[in-house]
Image (cartoon, one colour):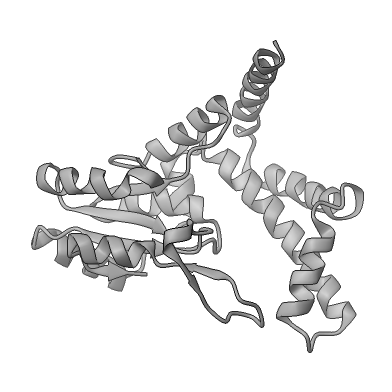
Length: 235
């Protein structure tokens, strides 16, 4: 019964999010500014973890600088939230005002498309990575095929699949990337295979590196996929 109630509640939340996505950007960003303030000062969402990470990453920064960066992080996180919700209903003309594809990048993808060559595109959690979908779906000829990590809640997972599916040729669960791509490369048109390069990697793909005075695990999985399938890689 508890699980049923949880899913019923999630359906109600999704219905509200669909209505929320219809608001204009200026109102969404106002709401994001309020939400970022509440997350930092009211909910104190992961505040200790964020502060400690910033202090380790930037040991030369003053407490005032750390506080400023932390505040900007919360505001950025809130912007990401409303921008992702907006993708539920945003028209193409609105996205094209905000998502820029440079001429040099377009030439690169056109050249691979003309050769019938698929490639792996690595990105990271920079800017708003969810907006990368419209970027590829609208402006370049290769079929966008992003990998994704399924969400535990099936209703929210279905919502994210709908959002990403508006712009993608196909979506591949991360754990199926290797075997699915082997078949798709034989049967599908040339693809731009999207992989998030800075996801927390599973044990077989962990490569420990020095980064911002810490030792995070870097994901070597994309390199292994590229070597196995003999595909070029761009970032």
